[in-house]
Length: 306
View 1 (spheres, rainbow, N blue to C red):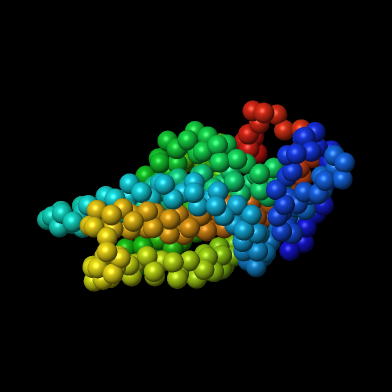
View 2 (view 1 turned 135 degrees about the vertical axis):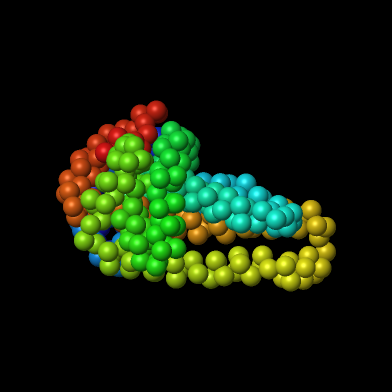
């Protein structure tokens, strides 16, 4: 992937060496006080370049992305396990509740990871604290966005599938727009429609490859959840029911966190690509990179990118 080099003077103490990463992201090398960064090129991207950038971000901030998202899955998986154990007559209600919680977690996960992705692409990596702060401030709007969009996508999917796919594409970057542009849910949906219009096959390619990448994890997570497999594992691991339940809950949350992190990173990169293609957002990003030459204030955040 093509990269642009940015040089600037850093006022950090020499002991605070910046984190080195592979080509395509912020790469630090100290020569006195000079730090040289290699950043992703700012230009419209094809499917391969979008995926390339997303994978680079994941390689650089994999643990941060996963550990931010995985805890969100703990209550969802716990409720789903509880519902299976109860085996009550309200299975359909439990299914709908689990589905709604899953949609909420996926949207909130994108909200948390978006700040990480944007900061990494601009050569100013956001800390977990900053990402959590951004996510918490956007949580009410992200939940409202989920309440508006996901029932419509689900209904469209049940009605001949095609309407649901179209809505999922048109609204695919709404969470990222809500977080980075600091707009409301309705405005984020309209922004998403305006940005992705005419790029269905790019979105479809990104989603298809991302789904293929996490398919082994999704399959593994589904297999170990089967009652027969659970019984076999519990017997061979020699764990009590409570200990096995806790272990399966943690491992399930971790696997779900990895899957959600993949989706969130690729959709955020796709959102930035759509803004570059539709609005020339690369000029704004170049200005932000110039500002990044200045020392970062202790209270600095990754916001203010609208």
